[in-house]
Length: 401
Image (cartoon, rainbow, N blue to C red; front, side, top):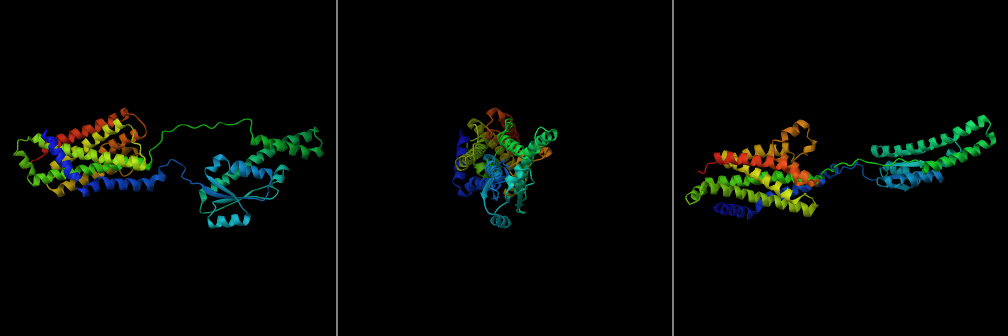
C-alpha cells in the first residue's frame, strides 16, 4: 500500500500550506458570496418590480371611492405590490414630483353621485416620469375600474331607456329606476354570481444565484486545485525526488498511483469543504447525498486526469501554468462556471458538452432541483470517461526523470 503513503504525504503537505488553502477554499467561497448576492435579484423568478408607494386622494368619500380604495388598491393581491396611503391633493402632487410616490390617484368630489346618476365622471392619475413601469400599473388599474363602472352604468341605462320608449315605465320614474338598477348592477359586479377560477401551471423551479454559483465556482476551483498536484509532480521531478523514490523498492505504478490518489484526496477535501460551507452559511441544498458523493468523486477524478496529463506535457512550471490556463479558463467559460448554461444559445450549449464543467454543473443542478441519483448517470459516466482518457494518456506520456 505504498501508494497510499505517498498520497497521504502529499495531502498533508498541502493542508499545512495556508496560502494554498486560501486559494482552494477561501477564494471560491468569496466569489460564490459576491456573485450570489450581486445577481440574486436576476434569478429570483419574480416580476422584478418591488413593492412601491401609491397615494390616493379621496375627495368623494362615496361608496364607489371606498370600493376602489379598499377592494381594489388594498386588496390581498395588490397588497403584495402596492403600499397605499390616503393623502391630500397638494401633498400627493408634491410627493410624486419628488419621486416619493410612483403615482397618485385623485377621486374627485361627487364622483359616486355622478356615476350613479349616469353623468360623466373621471379620476385623475398623475405619475412620476422616472417610474414608467410602476406608473403604467396604476394607470391600468384605474382604467380597469373605470371600464367596469362604465359597463355597469350602461347595463342599467339601456333597459331603462327601452322600457321608457315602450311605455312600460313613465318618464318621471325613469331616473329612480335607473339608479336602482345601477345600484343592483354595482352589487352584482362586486359580488358576481359567475366567477373565473384562478389556475396556474406548475413549473419546475430554477436554481437561485447562490445555488448555481456554489456548484459552478466549486467545479472551476477544483480544476485549479488539481493544478497544485501537477506543480507538485513537476517539482518532485525537477528536484529528483521521483528518482530517489524509484531507487527504493517502489514500482512506478505505486509512485504514479500515489500521486494521483493524493490529487484526488485533496480535490475531495476541497469540494467537501465548499459543500459544507455553502450548506451551513447560505442554506444551499445540494440534494441527494449519495448523488452528490458520486458526482463529486467523478468530477475530481476527471480533474485528476487532467492534472496528470498537463504535468506529462509541460516540462517546466511556466509551461504547466500556461497549458493549464489555456485549458481551464476556456473550459470554465464555455462550461458554465462564469455564465449560466441556460443563457447560452443552443449551438454554444452543444460546444460546452466537451468540457468537464458542463457535465459536473448539469449534474449538480439536477440534484439541487430534487432529482434522484438516476438523473446524474450520464454526467457521472461522461466524467469517468474523461478521467480514464486523460489518466491513460498522461500515464503513457509521463516522464520520471
